[in-house]
Structure formats: C-alpha cells, structure tokens
Length: 512
Image (tube, rainbow, N blue to C red; front, side, top):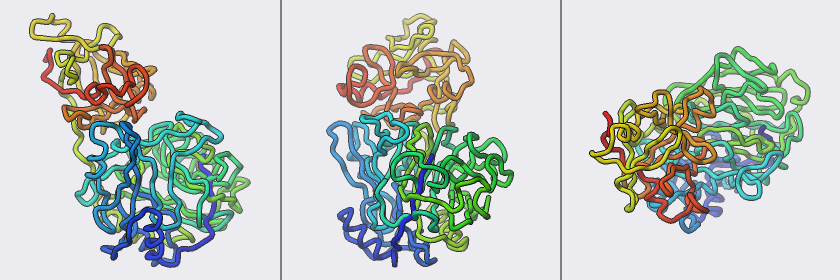
C-alpha cells in the first residue's frame, strides 16, 4: 500500500516555483495566461510542493516540460511541453515523435520547481515485472482525451505499471499537514493493491501504520470500503485503506464512477478528509471529515514523504487506473480553496475522444496489412487462433470462422472484445501472450484477457489493438499465429515488420 512523507519547505509564491521549474526542464517561464490549480492553492496559503500532469500546465505561467516519452524503435526521448504557457500538452509533438512505433512515458515532471519528478518505480516489498524488479512504464498513447478541445494523453496504469520519487523536497513528513488532489478515469479500476497517488515510504517497504497518506481509487474491500459495490475514493494510510473513521465499512463513502473524477485526500494532526466530484461539472462532495481512524498507529501520523503513482507504498503492483493530473500541497487546504480548484478543473474541459475502430454490435472480419499476408484474416479452428487465407471461394465454415462480433469490452466499455460468429459466448483472449478462442467463464481475469483497446493503426492502416491488461503489447500475427506482442525482443516480439503485423483492417464480414 502507499507510503507518505511530509515536505518541509514551502513555496512562497507560484511564480517562484515556475522559475525554478524552468531550470529543471530547460524552458523559460512565460507570463501567466490564466490562473491554474497551483496558483489557486498558493493564493489560499497552501502552495503546491509537487504538481504532475501529462495533460496540461498546473500553473498559469508554466511553459516547461510536462513529461518525457521514449520510443521503442531507437530508445530516443523527447520532452512534451504545453502548447503555450499555462496550456494543454502538445500531443501533436508526441504523435509525430512516436509515429510507427510504441512509446512509453519515462518522466512525469514536477511543475512546482522542487524537482519532485516521477520516474520508473524501483522494486520494494514487491518486485515489478520489468528488468531488475522495476515496474513497467505506461504506454504513452493508451489514454487519449481532449482538454479544452485539444488532444492530450493521460497515464494508463495496467497492473505492473508504477512511478515513484523516494527522494523528495518539501513533501510533508511526520504529522505535518498536507493536501492532494488527482483526476482519474472513474471507469478504469480494479480490486488490486493499490492504485494510489500521494505520500508514501521512502524505502519502498511497508514500515507500519500511518507511514503513508495517499489517494486510493478502486473497488478493493481488503482493508476498507464504502457503500455499494465501488469503486471508492479512499485514503491509503498504510496497512489500511480507509473510507472513514472506522476500519472496514463506512456508509458515508459512496461508490463513484464519473468518467473524469476529482479525488481529494488531506490531513493534519488528528484530522483528515476525503472529498470528490465530477471533474467535468459541478462541485465537490465531502465523504469524510473528522478525526484520524480509530485504529492504533494513525495518530499521530508518521508520513515519510516519497511520492507514488499507480502502486502501493511497498511497491504492490496489482492495481489498474488512469491518471491525468494531481498535486500535493504544503499545509491543509481549506474547502473554499479546493472548491475553487474544482471550478478550474471543470472549466478546463476534460472530454473523451471518439473510440476508433469498428462499431460495437457490428460483424466484421479482420485482415492483416503486412505485405506478405493481405489475403489472411484472423480465424479459429476450435480453440486455436491463427490467420488464414479466406476468399469468396472459401467454404462456409472457413468464412464463419473468420467472422467476429464486436462487443463492448468485457473489462472496460471504452475498449472492445471479439466474440466468435459461429461459437456463441466464446471470445478471443490471450493466455501466456498467445491468442485462443475460449468460452467466457465470467471471471475478471477472462474479461481482462479478452479486452482490447483500439488505436489508429501503427502503420497508418486500419487499427491496432492494445491488450487491456498488458498495455505495451498489441494484437500481432507472427508465423500465422496470434499473440499480444511488444515492439522488440525475440520471436513474436521481433521489431521486424512489427508496425505492419499489429495493424488490422476491418472488412465486411465473410459471414453476415
């Protein structure tokens, strides 16, 4: 679960933070074009000591880098800045840089000027799946949105993905007061531990009750929960996800699932609160406001001041979620300050983008685009999935085996699942990275394995389909078999022809 520590130094004014931020990211500060969340916090006497976003600047005068991406084809990196000071990220620069390959987000820069940048999380109490026990980095194109009508990308966290800074400047420690907010995708979550943003242990280990203070979002019932079936906004205080004063159930904390969700946790000596709201409209609701949990170890708090995103304080890595922006403050923000921040968030104009690819409910066939294989379609024989040549002279069985119904994603409705035309209830799903046709057993694992998120085709044709639970892997044909494949590696992960092999054209169904 997530860990925490308090920052000691205060940022006197937002403009000073912007100046120092420019030194870290190589961009000159500009005149403030508007008032943004960290300007509002500074005016309220609780300045930001960390400010992270891949979608927009969180200070009106900030013109430095928001994040860095690295492309797989040559491991080159590029920083992505706002279109203008205080503005939305320059997504076009990322799209150009990443064209024809895959990209990951390597750094989420701290806009406060304190250098509290988030990078690939190291191993801790739990090992991540990347080399050396590190966590995975997020696919840079997996969470497209618009902000104020401009395209931007969030941070898509599939299990195993995580970011961290264990050596911070100014984050609350001990029982010092702090506040934090984050904008999440309220439809992307799971019950794994723990999709957090906030204050955590500096050792990446569980060092005991009260050593973290982070926002949690998901539907885990392992430590605490609220009304309904979830998901819930809760506080990860280490060895406990708390939805209120009690360990376990707290009726005053409702299930929330806004597509764009503002989530707030704040704490000071023997007092803390949870607030949340729709990041597209309306105000904030307070789900808890009172004394620390009535469990030993949380009063006083023992925050440590690391910052985590997408993981628990001990590097537990089984959670899923999407992050767009978030800050941490020095001092306990007033409700009035947070209400002004919420008004800024709703005015920013977060919106979804139209999902590319075939329409849900349609029947299609999926044709390969690699030059060798443009007469081959995804097909099955029993549970075996492959590509096969299909033409007007093919048998009725072969045509039916190469026809798929597009269903709303079993794990997330923003994505899709493919049901066999002639084997009702059976879907394309991956197991050990290979594709099979299996009957839906109703499990969460099956839903995740059978869900694919359409993107524009990597080679410029049709669509590419990202695995929902392995976001750096795409549906690929290799030696006529089907896999979810990364860009680069041995056998079916080979970089050779990868852009073509992961791009598919939807055609009229061979069997209507």
